[in-house]
Image (cartoon, rainbow over all chains, first blue to last red):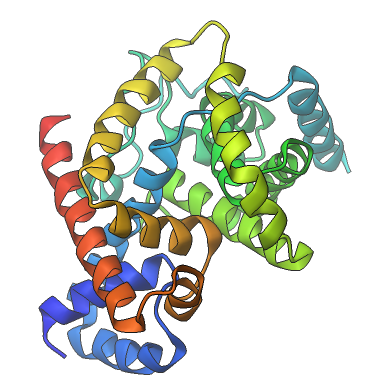
Length: 78
Length: 216
């Protein structure tokens, strides 16, 4: 697999869209390309951030945050 | 909080080497990484500030997957609790806090969707939810929200520049967790075409984001 093809597959990989039969080949290429591959995969995860940031934020109630923080403080005190 | 977030020195150089898409924060605001470090030190105020900064984005992501307000609120609480519990597993060397949170939230939301086998119901609700969402987002925007809004507009421009078929394939893969085969079956499209749409669409977005990073 060329590095260009690996880049295409990496973008599919980070969104979980590689088919099972493609994963073995991808993992093999990942080992072959080593650090260069890992660095590129890390970059691809910015797609996750971008898709999330493309959404209009949704509102939540203050009560929800209060419940969350109460749970956190309770857990910390345990 | 421990009181050292705003005055803390830069903590990691690794994060700065990674591509940045996150919104520009108000001057003096602690970085996401500062907040993650506070959470790792079991400072609840770190989680409180991270929640204030990103709960809207995380909830929007959950809603995009499961299309149910009550379930989204439950999941939002669970996800931020998981962020608190799993913060020790976060490493700035592997990525940015927002990416880590989004990856975690997406996985939880898609797992929830699969467990409930709610695909059909989600399909029915998608349209009405999409229509209701803008009206539901009516309140005084904070500086962070305004910055998020600017970022959203820029990212949407990149995504909206894609042909609709590519947008649809990416939407189904990312927000519904569908495999290529599932997308092919769902859209009555040959598997090879789905693969091509995903590859081309994701490459265009990736390249567009690179240009965007240069502009931001």
